[in-house]
Image (tube, rainbow, N blue to C red):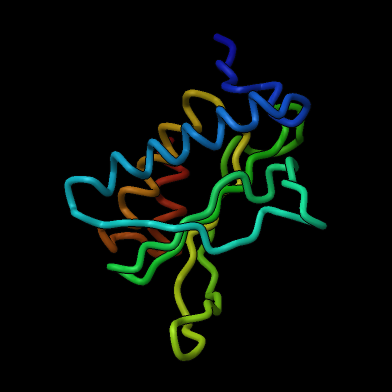
Length: 143
């Protein structure tokens, strides 16, 4: 059975790109709602005053209540390689009075129904602080 690709024209159609971003935002809002957590973007998606539509990142969010970040890089469904990969980075964010280090979950994804399900599971575990490098590998291998 063929993999169902979601928003496959997102890199060529700004409307579809914005719909894709909205779907990631709604997903995170729904996962954070019951916990009472908030999120805000931490990366600038503008270059020379114009919005970038390259998918890197298509979505990013910092969750202050748990001092964690999420960055989603969405690539063309025609790209070679796995439908989803993930890793954890240490990043520096500007705080109110100083820079602070935070952990960032990075998802590199060719968006299909199956990959979005896996991404959702990874994000849930990340929010619940039950995800590290080895559990990422275990979760990806199980899917």
